[in-house]
Image 1: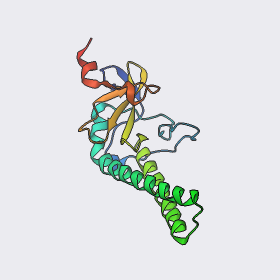
Image 2: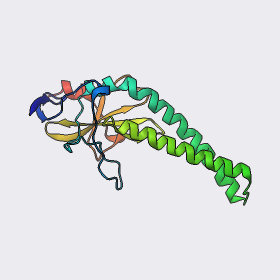
Image 3: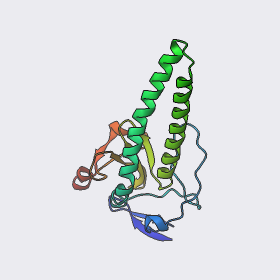
Length: 176
């Protein structure tokens, strides 16, 4: 079993060693009930990211998140248009076409989110482009947190705190 250092310098044991993303064979997902769960490897261990590993994935993640954020806006617009037509009882071919577009767009987004989750990340919010990376700090499970537009992964929070509980990685590293 290999030994690794978490993002605060603590030793962590892992059976997985980082490889180029295209060379890694990711395993099955756990069943989803309620909140999304992290992707697991075939030995059922969740990959824990360092801030450096997470930041190295950003060139692959950024364009996908950008596209998903834009598609989410289109989905919201189509949904509102369909709801207005349904509210007034309009059941036209145009409404049916918009509903089909909406369904296809949502299915496409689900597929794209699933592809991102196959990298081991958790897509948290498409309005803001929030992505979490499972990590460990002093043996405690935490999430490295990135928001679309940020240049690197520079924040973390506890799994139950979410975006509002974000703390700077740099502040944590320089404070005793």
